[in-house]
Image (cartoon, rainbow, N blue to C red; front, side):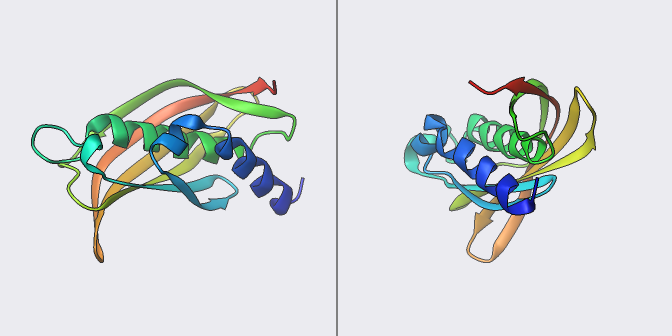
Length: 141
C-alpha cells in the first residue's frame, strides 16, 4: 500500500464520522503512524469555568490516535478503540484544540497509541491532555 492510498483511506473514514462533523473537526495531517485533528472551541463545547469540556479533548485525542493506528493497518480493515486513558494536565482555554495521535507499537492484532491534546490561542500552543490506549483492526462494513 502506498502512502497516498493510506492517506486517502484514512481521510475517507474520517469523513464518515458524524461526530467529527458535529464538532467541526478537521483532519489536518496524516502520515504513517501519526494524525493531527483540530476543532474550534465554541461556546456550546465549554464547561462551567469557560474551558473546553474534557469530553472534547478526549474525543479528539481518541480519534487522532485511532486514525494514527489505522494508517498502519492493512488496507482491508477499519479501526476501533479497545481502551483509552486520559490525563488532564491543564484547563483547555483557547480558540481551538489540536490532537496529535501517534502509534507507539503496531502489532498484528493490537496497536498501542498515544495522543497529546493542545489548546491553541493565537500563536500559543499549550499541552492540556495526554491519552494512551489500545486500538484493534476490524473488518470493514
